[in-house]
Amino acid sequence: NIAEKSSKKWAYFHDDSLRKESDTMKMAVELKQALEQNKLALYHQPQIDLKTLRVCSSECLIRWSNTQGEFIPPTVFIPLAEDIGLINSITLWVIKTALKQQKHLIDEYGYNHMVSINISGKDIAREHFFLDVISIIEASEIPADKIIFELTESASFSSNKQTIELIEKLRDIGITISIDDFGTGYSSMSQINTLSFQELKVDRQFVENIDADPKRKVITKATVEMAKGLGLEVVAEGINSKEDENILRGFGCDIGQGYYYAKPMAFNDYIDWLNRLDHGRIVDGLTGEFIP
Ligand code: C2E
Ligand code: MG
Ligand code: MG
Ligand code: MG
Image (cartoon, rainbow, N blue to C red; front, side):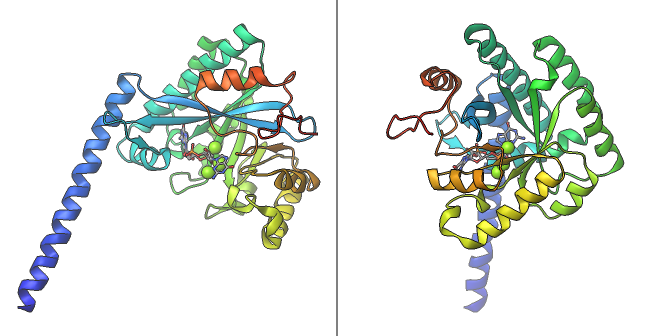
């Protein structure tokens, strides 16, 4: 009886893990097809200069809906792409698309803010990445000093000699290097010490609803102070309210990003959103008034 029960249990787990594995394989095949058939999309979320309240940059965020129309979050398929060796092609597609859209914003509308692109640790580990980036930038006619690469500290990101050299080469041609989700990685302090970044993004877990949380205030204030002391530009992710914004501005944070200003938008919606601003200044989404 017990044996029967436990073998059933085993069979259940066994089936389940097989099903999971085949789901993952199916997703991998579909993702590859989506990339080849140009069915991925790039959304834009504005970043706001907290001194002038003007849009100073846009973070490009990848979006994918599979053939059944289900939305798959990037937190699911980016790690998958890293596992199956597809991340390099995805990243190059993202950079190409981001710069093409940037060119469109300049040529058609005269907007000329920075463009911020997420780069995987796996990209940085690949030696040919630098040459690929150079050729995309050259073809795009976008100056490299308008481009920010956001790197997330993660297991796939090791600060070895080769990585450090590649990051320095990217900096040398004018790209701004930003450390993303600061505070959530396993070696934040060590990385900030060994790698040369120009921008630091405080993770949203320290920023969201900061007004109601004394602990977050202490952590974030200290992080901003440290970053400013190191001469870095500081971005706060996850600004959700006027209160969040005021607190971060009070700490000396340079740039804000979050649902308070705007959620990530499809490119056309992003253009409409920009067009509704007053000379690049943001207005309160709820009241329609200028955010002072
Ligand atoms: P991330 O780079 O830290 O991007 C910020 C994430 O926070 C985005 O999630 C954005 O939609 C979300 N966010 C922004 N403001 C708020 C807010 O006020 N509240 C809340 N709750 N969320 C906010 P998303 O687009 O789902 O992306 C998740 C992660 O996936 C990104 O985190 C990044 O690590 C990765 N990712 C997205 N696009 C790409 C890409 O093109 N390439 C690579 N390598 N990774 C990407
Ligand atoms: Mg990012
Ligand atoms: Mg982030
Ligand atoms: Mg994040």
